[in-house]
Amino acid sequence: MSVLSDLVAALESGSVRVVDLTAPLQPETPVIQLPPQFGASPGLTLDVISRYDEAGPAWYWNTLHLGEHTGTHFDAPIHWITGRDLPGNATDTIAPRLFVGPACVVDVTAESGRDPDYLLQPPRLLEWEREHGRIPARAWVFMRTGWARRVTPEAFFNGGHTPGIGLEGARFLAGERDVLGVGVETVGTDAGIAGGFSPPFPNHTTMHGAGKFGLTSLCNLDQLPAVGAVVVAAPLKIVGGSGSPVRAIALVGG
Ligand code: MN
Image (cartoon, rainbow, N blue to C red; front, side):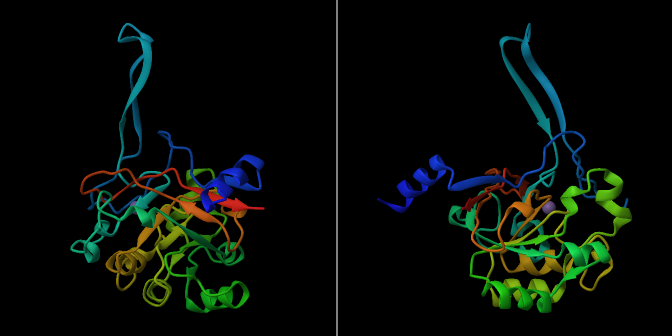
């Protein structure tokens, strides 16, 4: 038996489950909202080309129009100015090996519930490591906040007050743990008020400057163990793309 045939058998028996970490992608899917002086990233528009009608009697298909960073999506290093000159920094040039990796899930639901501006920082990460072991290289670190349960735009955006990764937390994960990147349930990996931080958007600045990635608008993190899940998250191969919607999934053992 090989590892892969064992995996196929485990999927068939149900001893390995596939958890969908992806939010529904539809016109109502929330997108990040920036101050009006900046360009806005559009949400999804979906136009029917044909639906078994005169425009296509036997076939149904749609045209998509959307920003790269819409819904559950992948942030590539080229997304940020700090990562613009790195090798392998765009959706088409990232090594595909990096689209598969283990997940470390840090549950800060309680902290984020108490303080919607909560920042994930090294003391909390070190506390997690004392319980679950060292965060391995090329792992995703997922910040579980419970934000995916906020289904109305008002609750999801929360007046701009949403949790994120702090500067020192980002430096620790990128520099001392060599992670793949960080994933969040909110619309961005930085806190909602992080545009006013120094540097602005410290997680984007740090992670992408180190060639690391981001995943946002994740769902179902409560179905993952703290350690042991394997995540597959591959962006569309947009040439020179800064990111893309993804169907992020996790393999979870029994
Ligand atoms: Mn993004």
